[in-house]
Image (cartoon, rainbow, N blue to C red; front, side, top):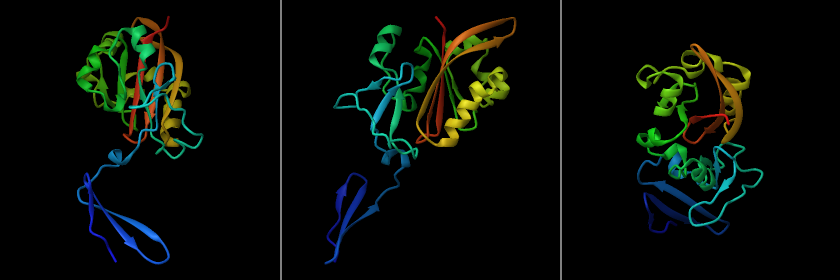
Length: 206
């Protein structure tokens, strides 16, 4: 026996009853992306790694198992403390932040796909590297844009995050080699398997 469907947004919920068990059957009335079905259980600051409050609550410390299969719902943003230190607007989630506003940020941000291909390259990074985004977008960051990063310390960490299929963050100090000069910078690497996006955050080391 089937009950009449109850509408839950874009999902029709059917309840199938039997004497032995109760089974819930979901019938999708409209296509729903995997991202829309994910639940954010924690947000971590991409710079300082502190836990950020989730909407309608306080900072949440994920259980040990969350994120191990890439579906744990850990996202990366910029926390209130770092916002205050940098004088920037809050960022709850880098993956869903308005790309047109990346140029407002006082640090470099490079968005890449799982292959390391550059999808976003903001103004701060353009000025640091002396590269225009028009000649950078679509290229492989670790080999075509910044070949000095094609080492285990940098690219190797990114590849490891992608291979593990987990929401991850790593931080390192790195020397960027530009024509005629070298610059010591602080790097934050993040990977979000739900969106299949990585972010390379760059700021001058203090």
